[in-house]
Length: 333
Length: 118
Figure: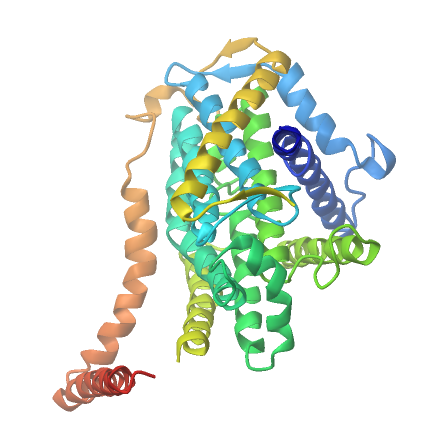
């Protein structure tokens, strides 16, 4: 009875506080602050400075202002309730996806649960974003959505393949194959195996390119393409709805970076989570992933749609598929 | 360690989908409590132009066609076409024989591995 009660409490804590709603919102706002600040410094600007120490609370203030203060502008074609419904649903999918990782005090795990992770982050999140945009129609929005759809045809398969190779290698011979939990714990040993090193490097390169494209950082910011198509798929969003869309976008970046940190770079392992070296290593890996993405963002200009697709094809999909074939040869030959 | 160890991915998907709706409920309550309920009616944003300059509020889905098929997929197809259709029959024979030969070798290797039960 007491054990069952503790299980329920841990589940509630995992969903509501860590690594659920509270933590994920905080992490995504911190990530936004970090890439804005670093981008600012790389461009000889200050970046966020006004709210909190070094502008740390600026993303929180921006979110609060959008949701609590600003009004929502709607036109006669808008369906704002549907847009808000899918905004919240997309955020919910991202929150529960973290229960699959060892980061969570309450784990949900099972064989092939990696497929469930992909179902949550590669189906619900893009679908929510697309329906949100289509619920607030306009010419610029539709152009942005069609570009986003075009992107998704390559990004999501690349994301799946880039993570599948390390997940297969690290978990296939454990008792729970293709499990996110087991893969996170064991993937660090794949880096120590010289035969598997090329597979890990290919997967990492593919995953970084995918993160860049999922985050819509330069050179892959053609779906929002400021100045050219105003704000692309986000053009008709305003007030609370813009707050939700922006939060979902930042959470998507945070969850993708967490997935790369755990499933390719091995999270805190070989140290345990609740140890100083483990926490430091985890933070270093996460920050390294976001830093690389931010540096690439600032080093490139915007690609045209076909240039972006060719780049994703060459540097994400092909390396990911090659890594996957090599991993399968290693496992089953 | 607390958690649920499921025997199949279907159960994991079911549990996480149910939890997704729980999170949705919590977030919806928080969002409805803090959001600004004021709504302002505007026209579709058209860079200051009137709505009459477009015949539909949404452009055609042909964007997807032009972006993906014409520019990206056609590029891949063009490479393949230029490799195969050089106008020289010998090139075509080499291409087909090369790929069929590779497939045949793979099939023989896989067959041997299967028969020897490696």
